[in-house]
Structure formats: C-alpha cells, structure tokens
Amino acid sequence: MNKLFILLLLLAATKSFGQTKNVNIPRIFDDTIKKTEIDTAFRIVYVDKIKPDLKPAHQPAIIINGKFVNTLLLNSLNPHKIENIEVLNGDTLIDNVQYYGKIHIKTKSDYNPKSISLTELKNKYTNLNGKPVIFMIDGNIVNADYDNYLIDENNLLTIIVDKFQNAKENIDLGLIKLLTKSEGNIKNRKNIIRGTEVTMNK
View 1: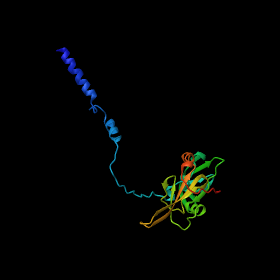
View 2: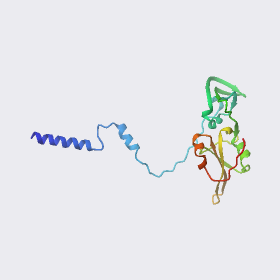
View 3: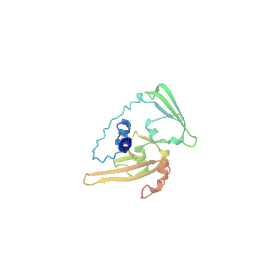
View 4: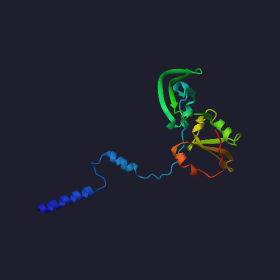
C-alpha cells in the first residue's frame, strides 16, 4: 500500500511540474509571456499632431560658446563634441523675450557649430529652390517651419536630393535627406544610395 501511495505521489508531482502554467507563478511572469507573443493584427494608426507649448518663456535660453541660438539647433548638435554643460536657474530676458533659465554649452576646441535654417540649406546646396520639399534628418521627417528650423551645418555628413512623385495623385515634391555625422551614418556611408555625388565646401 505504501509503495502504491508513493507511486501516486510521484505521478502527481511529475504531472504538476510538467504543466505550463502554475497557479503559484506571479502575475508579472504571466504578463511577460503574453507580451512576447507575436502580434500580427492589421491596424491603421492616425498620428495625432500634438504641438508642445513652444513659448520661449517656458523654455531655457540656449547659449553655445557664448552665443544665443535657437533651441532647435540642439537636434543636430554633435554630442561627442560637447565639452561642458552648465544649467542656470532664473528668468532671463534676451531680445525682449523672457526665457526660463539658461543652458550654457561649451564645445571642444576643434568644433564650432554653424547654424543654418533648412530653407537656407535648400537654397545653398540643392537645385530645388522654387520647388516644395520634404526634409528628413537621419530618417525622421521634419514637420516644422523650415525658415525657423536650424541645424548645425558643420555636423552634416551627406545631403541626398531625391524626388517624391505620383502623377495620379498629382504629387511632385523634392525630398531632401540629411545625414548627420553619427557613428552609424559614417560607418554605412558607402551603402547609402547610388547617384551623382558632389563634394562641396560648407
């Protein structure tokens, strides 16, 4: 009888260990299992264009090497060339605009940012002066005023001039893709695109 009881106990233990879900497993583990499942459901997503509050009073003043610059310039600044960042609290008045604090950025001696608007860049480097264009920076579409969107010209690696055309939809736009001097872009430069290459001085 004892042998039969032990055999049944071992069988029950083996069966419970072989189950894939145990009542004692924490819920976190169950959620992790669910999250790793592949989701192949078809979806359509309309992106909400929620514009952040861009009032200068709610932003700090950006000072690079002692010069006041547009906040957007930070998007293309080379982070590897920054030597020091200092944040100062308190309201600051610059050109009759009040800013909340200051961010002083000092770059390394071998690097000096050069700001240029996307409109100025289009007129300076492309033949699309009178044509409507779409800008992309490192694969991201720029959804902003090109006259006021500043980038660091000295941190540009490549400008790819392309077209976005669809005769049926009556679409004829220029497409300007900007690649910055990130490690990935430099590494993959030879694999970027085929076309006529022009080397220019900035």
